[in-house]
Image (cartoon, rainbow, N blue to C red; front, top):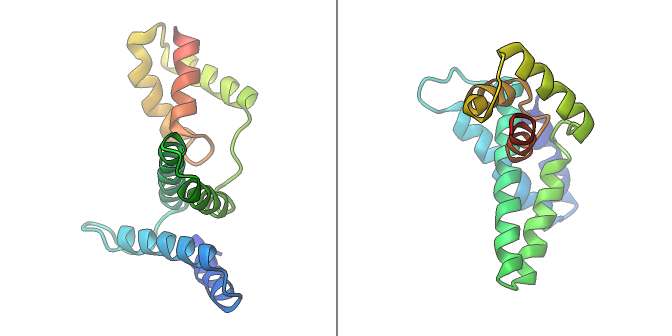
Length: 149
């Protein structure tokens, strides 16, 4: 079942159960999907990796907002963002554990023949495409930096 269909079905269930936070979050995801499908140059349905990228983007937005709200002592908004992040996380593919991520990145570095921090851009380009949806870009960058450092 496609992500869009899953979201639509779960949205109906959330609306019937009167789960306000889940309804709002799923509507936001559905909106992102519809916007992406109707973008200029798109042919309609999204591929799985495109769906995962949308979900990663939504999760990152919630995570960043939560950090800002926490630093500003806005506990109410922090809790709201974290609740939305939990809902979005249910639709993301399972994230790689740090050990597997490092092994995968070492392989990419070896394939590209990267030797130092000057090659970080090349490695990041390939790594973000290869690991899309499986790991957060920020985490990938930290590991690549430590491996090339």
